[in-house]
Amino acid sequence: MRKFLGVALSAMMVVGLAAGCGKQAAPDAAENTTKPVAEAEEKKLTVTTWDNETTPQFNATIDAFKKAYPDVEIEIVDTAANEYNNKLSVMLAAEGSDPDIIWVKDMGYILSMVEKGQAMSLDEFIEKDKLDLSVYNGAAEQLQVDGANYSLPYRSDWYVLYYNKDLFDKAGVPYPSNDMTWEEYEALARKVTFGEGSAKVYGTHNHTWQALVTNWAIQDGKNTVVAKDYGFLDSYYEQALSMQKDGIIQDYAQLKTANIHYSSVFKNQQAAMMPMGTWFIGTMMQSQASGETNFNWGIATIPHPEGVDAGTTIGALTPVAISSTTDVPELAWEFVKYATSEENSKVLAENGILTGILSQEALDIIASADKFPADEQSKEALTYTEYIFDRPLDKNIEEIRTVLNEVHDLVMIGEYTVEQGIQELNERVGEIKGY
Image (cartoon, rainbow, N blue to C red; front, side, top):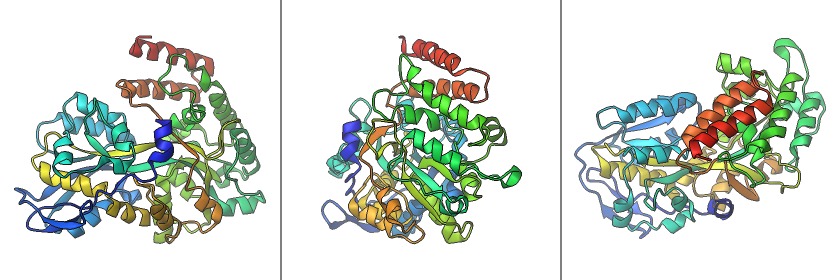
């Protein structure tokens, strides 16, 4: 996976808008021609999204598709990110044809959908339209289940370090660089922590996801979150707990109890830094454009372990799939094909969203977009030297993630020592995997 994604996210889609509904015609990206579109019995699609109001990642695609196909009605079923998979499971288990289009929040969830017969195979559509999967440069194949395509790459994300330039200036501390170890990052966070009470600025922010600890432990490519021995997590949990104890990051229990979203912490200037995915670039650009925020911000490459090359990052693909119960499969396919097209990658790039196509053109569009940080370091931070999946496509990944999340909670609130947490992970994951 690591080798594939080192190059994979540098070309991935020339799919284009090949068909539609009604009597419209649309350009075929592969042949650069126009072909007729079959009549659709219905002209309505239901799509699932998460946190739709706070990010342009879905509406940009939906709006662009509706402009091309004005006769199509699109109903959005939106859910909070932390509830999305649970709600989706309920929707897919219920009788009926909704939803039609499913954005898959976590890559491994597609395995569960296929196992339960909830995802439609795209192979016949791909063959009919002669869709060349090589344009995805390996990403489509990485999403295959038993050699079949049930989804296509929609978005590509990896972790970067966001920082508030104004808070660094106020503290008189130099900005983060594009080459910092996690030890140097912690030292920097301690320098830029200042203030008291409600006016306190934390040096950095760890959201409540277990990935905000475990990701850094697999950044060297030697381990994954599906393991026999989780001892490799030890130093990363110790660092997070130390920073929490010293007030460099906010208290985990308070964040969890109050269900505080990471975006509000950064937008409200409560933290000088924040490791987060590239999807947050679009959120910040949208926030700046609307006047919700007006401080100076930037991004740097994510810090790295000692001995690992600068620019090595952790990330994942966001697939888009079609429900096996859809009653408008042809129309749903046209949406999926457009959503993962080169044309749409440019639309998304204008909104700060990195797609399955990581072309230089898309990067240039983002770097020159209004409200993207103008400094060279932020532009350079849009690239990486190595890209590692945050979790493998393992048939047990969702069950294992449940264990990881439960143990993460217990360690971060102090109910378990790090040693106890690692022991429980070894035992419970071992039972799941039969080790």
